[in-house]
Structures are given as structure tokens and as C-alpha cells.
Length: 137
Image (cartoon, rainbow, N blue to C red; front, side, top):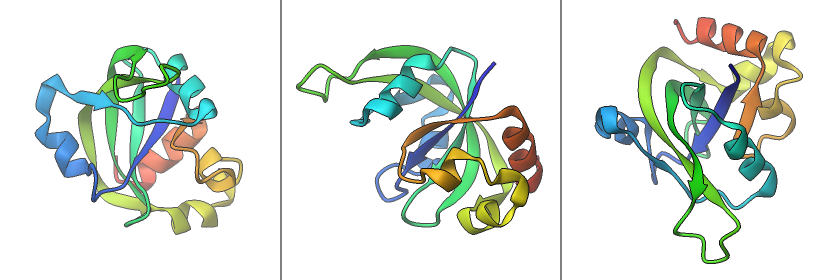
């Protein structure tokens, strides 16, 4: 199974908002980048993603699970973009900040380090293990 990272500005949709959505989860919409769209399209039900607070905090704070595969995003009038549904799985015991990720030589190839603006990105198995451990999981 693949692993992912999804980003949200906490002022728009925070980890706490995601947790409040409960088991039913919520849609992950608003993606308007073709590379991010391809990543959403590649996601499968049951795969997991890091939940990253962008702009404010710049840290990974939890893990979500994909509960519904890619489907059209009704907020996109062009009809080119879609979304997936996610639910909160587990909060990090200690958030893992972007500075710590960039400082770790084992994470130097991570997409977050090399293309930090991409809102939906793949995470390798080793990156997944390292960051989970850094987050106390």
C-alpha cells in the first residue's frame, strides 16, 4: 500500500476539524494542481496519509485514512479536478515540523523537502516509518 501526505491550512481545515468529522470522515477537495490531482487519483481505500498543517505550524500532526476513492469535485466548475474522502486515524504524540524533516539527512529525498508547495504528495515506506517514529507512533 502506498502512503501519502495531504496539506491543509489549519485556519481553513485543521486536524481538530478532521477529528470532529468522526468515523464518517469528510471530503478532501479544492485541489487545483495537476500533479496533486494525479496523486489523489492514485489513492486507494485503506491507504493512509500524513495530515500536514501548512503555512501556520508547518508540521505533520496526524494520520488519516482514505475511505472513498477519487471522484469529481463539485466545487470545480471546470470539471477537471476531483477529491477523495478521508477520516482521522491517529494524532501524533509530538508534531513533526518541517525544519526537523529538512534537518534529517534520511529524509532529504522526501517530496515535502524538494517540492514543499505540492498539496498532495507520495511518501516512501522508509519516510513513513521515520516520521511516524519522530511523531511518537
